[in-house]
Length: 70
Image (cartoon, rainbow, N blue to C red; front, side):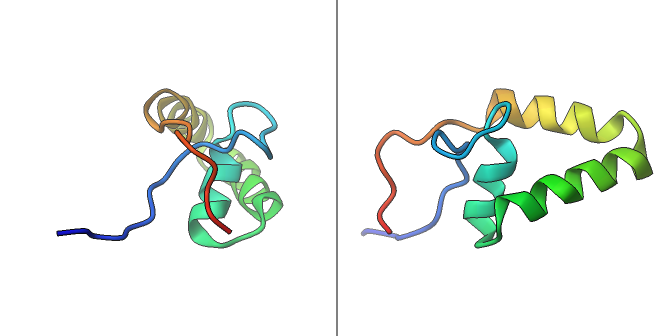
């Protein structure tokens, strides 16, 4: 039984710091710049909570093992 699903991974091509925002952008089919701007907006609205979430995602979300098919 083969199930095709999209896995959340950190980006290795379009990263600024750890590739979390670019990986989320690829996963959600959004421009990574929009995701980065939403993270900055979240920083102003939630304070350091979004930074903690980013650091946790940088540690937990894996990098891709192979080149994604486009």
